[in-house]
Image (tube, rainbow, N blue to C red):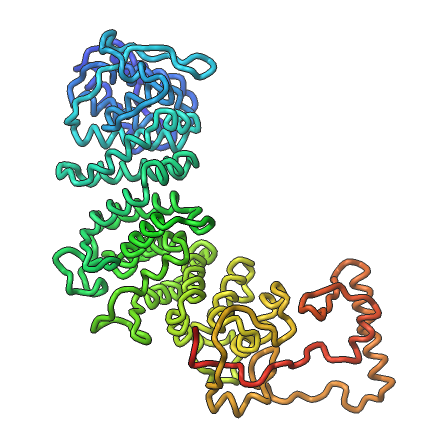
Length: 588
């Protein structure tokens, strides 16, 4: 972005050291450059020099207005990823951290806690990165102006975003420890929304960019409990039972009937959800102890409230629920039982005496994402995986979801992938171009079918089901997986009547088609069959295709020319559907 400002003049004013002159010069620069996010390379050295002067100036005793002007300038300059040099030293970062109200520590503690004499001197770095002893700049007042506080936080966020060295320095200064202390002070009434938001945004960046900081917050600083409490306070929740929440002052009102949360509440809550996602990312992949499980259940109860709450505006509401679902997917699977623990209320969605409000909301959210059809891997899979795991471990949840997704079959003349029902939409996803989307959709339906191959084919058709069955070695119908109850017959009359005429490949009753070999002699049939074999052989030899055959173990193996010849005299698919195994009223 071109500018009419004379940087040299501003630098000259800075070098005078007079607060009034500096204030006027920086206010002019900040006003002109406030909306500037692209910078010319020609003035790069001048901007770096200005940044050095401003950082040095911040180490003096300044009036709040001058502090604010200096930090606004740092915020603007730190947007330039090529000019991070003045801000990524330990001394500069610790100065900004003090203005942000963060207590920092490092191995070179004398740099940060030395006597205040020699104002304006900056700690220098050796070439190997270690710190020389230097005098500490005068710290800002404990009662920092909130605007000063916010500008310093924004500046640090910019530095972390653009500089890997800045991230290393932040880790060395244990910045996350100071941030955690600020998060514990969430009850301070004088904090405004902007300060709270950027403390959380800084926490998010630290945990997103540094694995070591992520682990430190999660384990040493008890991040799940700390941030769970922060989320609880942000949403103004109280506990009406051990693992059931309500909005304070509205204990008798279900979350779905409460007024929408404010935009500020949603913005803070989403930042907390993103941080929690970062620090719980591996919780599903490891065994958690009883204490951790209790923390996750406590968090899960809060997330259930988030799921059933709404924001002011459809787009914001969708984003809020998206972050909630993402985090729920990180919780250890056994802890998901908190979603169905609350008592059934008058307006609750109920199944077999169990509160299914959360499951119903997840199902609605999943279908909405399918309908939107945008970035399905990022937007759909979290809810799809969460529903799959919930159905796998919780009998009542599976029965409820199955009643919604796979109701008893009545329409047998339309292909499973044709139509507007949720089953139709999910079956269409089973042939999606994205392998992850395809596999997750198939897995969800397979679990709802209690991993019964015959039932799975009944609802999806063998052609749609073949991908999952081949991957699991289940292409030979009749081999089932999973620990589920025995089945009992519960087919509809419509399905019973049409069952014998259903094409197992497509899953529908098809009109009879004329036999293409009608009127041909046996010699002509054999000739056509051998022509087909030779065509497959030619394509195989040129590596255009690789013919495969179903082995006795249910997996695919390479076909030879002899196999192709033999296959022309035997059917490819044999029906091995066992009797009385299609549906059940009883699950476990």
